[in-house]
Image (cartoon, rainbow, N blue to C red; front, side, top):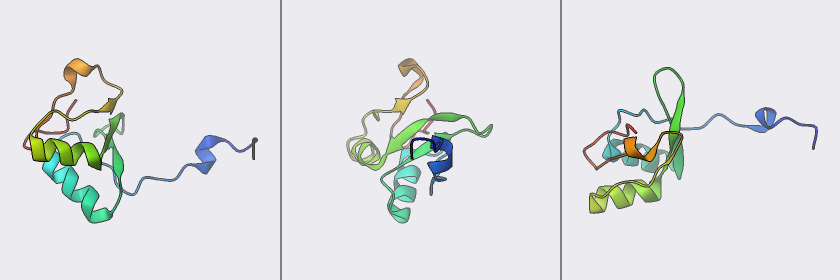
Length: 87
């Protein structure tokens, strides 16, 4: 088991979100597919971060900023239920 590379054990995500999707659209997609979270990948295929359903529900209901686990600096991470997932 120790000799197996992590890449060989990895699965493709069932849902990949686009940074241009709104919080509401991302929430709807995660709820419809029944997954708790998803990576956010730009058009070049670069991982921009990830988001989970708990954070999207909170942002959508309270219209507050989402807490992102991102590869981008926090100064570029803002969102609202009508704003995009861009960060």
